Image (cartoon, rainbow, N blue to C red):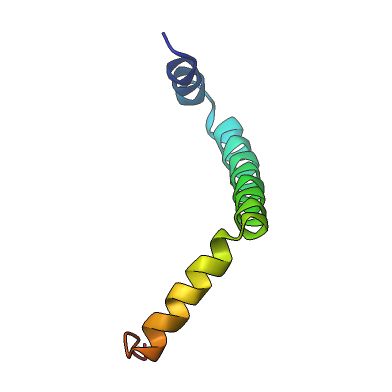
Length: 66
């Protein structure tokens, strides 16, 4: 059994209160991981390339008001 499968079984066995606590913890954990990824992408220049692409698309009329 893989580690992920073991975790799935453990999560399924949590009480409703424990599951609620786990969800809150995981939301924060996931947000921090996302923040680290955004920071890494910014540092590597990946976001700059995406911004330039979005600006070019906008200037070419590829955007519409929402």
